[in-house]
Image: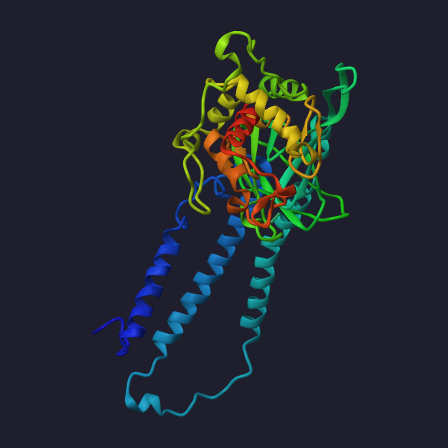
Length: 426
Ligand code: CUA
């Protein structure tokens, strides 16, 4: 006996084969991989664990119902099937009006199943709502704001430093603000205020907690806690425009001492790299020409193996200055950042850049990712981003009608200089 009857029309056969192939492709696409970076089946904190436990409980209850109902159905179908030609034309058996015992027990069983699911659901709604009362005193507070298409993170209790433009002396710059990478203390509850400046976004860190919407003009919040230091992926989980799918972020959880060191480094104004004296011959020329930037395909992913294998180590390495820094190129990039009006949209504390439209960049060189967590932060990917941001993240505000916003034109040396400068901002 043939199991599958192939259609006679060859076009139909091709379509059937394609459909089968597509289905198997989708099934292979992570359906059985429960340990991907955005898998909720491998939680790393109490909130995500509570959510997973509830999900599994619901699965088990529904599975039990499926098995019981399926077994009764299969039994009835086999036992009362038509065996002979007479059976097929037999008179229907006398009709009853139900059996009160059976009906009462079915109602009882349904209520029981719902109660088994409802009690832990309600418990979890309260638990995941906010930091438990007993731990409130220890909770750390952060504000996350959604933009089309990146996340801003503010630390309301940490006051950052800048340089007074007139006197050059250290000055207060308000609460610490950063973008795309949320650094939190591990083993400590973190209360995250959720805001949006434009449309509705949704804040989701699959292994830690989520999802809660970021709604314009409405104060939402959630809480997370990472059991151990680690590197986690985050994702906007509400359709918010063309580049919603690439609106990502990262969460870096650090032990108390490392978190403190990071905080202290972040509060400092942007780093300066001393330019060697011009009088000594070659001093005033860039060492590298950066002619070797490669070209990229549209929507091509951008992670090196080293980063993929050990992202937290890659993050730690990013905190140190790059080995092949070129002070002349960096100084050139710093001047270009001002003259090409980049400073009108981005903040770099202490370097005279105070724009707030785009992500904060004071310590952008110390982040592992750029472009809303989409690309690894290295010279190649950074070049790719500033060369054609519209290719990476369609519809973003830095790319207007095929040009950089404000009609900024950059030569390849300009691009190399800006890349060197941004990379130096540790
Ligand atoms: Cu922001 Cu989707």
